[in-house]
Length: 380
Image 1 (cartoon, one colour):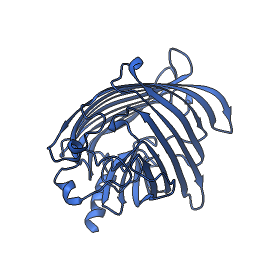
Image 2: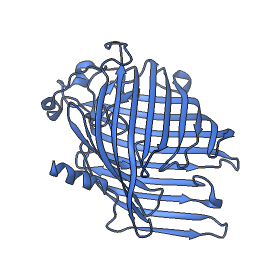
Image 3: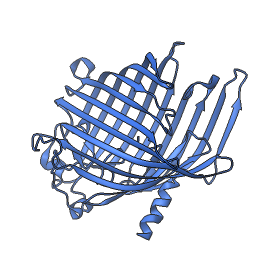
Image 4: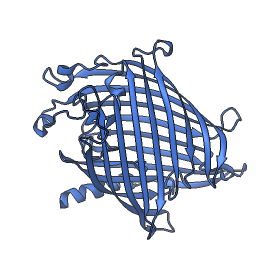
């Protein structure tokens, strides 16, 4: 256990720089711009040792909430062969109009992408996992753009927005042996291909902060569709609902909860199916452990900032969590509360150089294994 705690501490400090800078620039237009450059050092169970760089620029022009624009460039590679390059840009204006827009360009190569089969009761063996029988090679490129327009205001911080989303992606897959689950099952999407989607939805957000909320909630519902008209190789539709609520209780402890429901129908490639069992939910299982036509997931965390240094330039926090969920497929019982999977764990957070740059490390436990995670921001 001591070694696990040491590794968790390492993953918690993933972005603590050996060298770095953060500066506040006051421009003539009364804009406040915060720049951060941070070397990345991390360890996770699924990627191994990670090294890279993170660049962030946040423009707080005219005290716009939560910002006027936020741009992040993340480039990293790992000892297990995973490479990621991602550019993330979000801005509150589009063509001079108050339309919030979000653009993501991402490339990932992962020679240890996983496929355990479809359904809630797929078998798992540690020996087979270590032998690579659940692995495949996946190369993935993504361009995503979304735009949100405010429809009405409610409460102190609340806004209801309408949203439209465009997403284009291309996936290349290759097998890692004739005896792998991926080759034996040959799921839809075995040969990769294009998935181009257009989606619509609504977002209601009343959180007092988008980075470290202490009260309020965020609720999003919507759907995405892919087919011949969008230039896709697969025709399907997915629906989702995501509800999050944050409640202060005592001693500055925040109870954060999330309920997410997903459903897909049509000719859905395996990587676009609802998936749980990763750092985004059901933490503690092997990467992307469960996938099916539908999923339900509940997450709850007790969070608290513990202490700070250098006039709050660096803050340290901790949290406890438990996740519950399952997937549904043709092979599973349809009982909503039957055979639910449960995990639990704990983690630590750090805000580095900027209160809006939060990193975290977590240790999650399931009945099959434990996993170490590291990433930007809270899980939700």
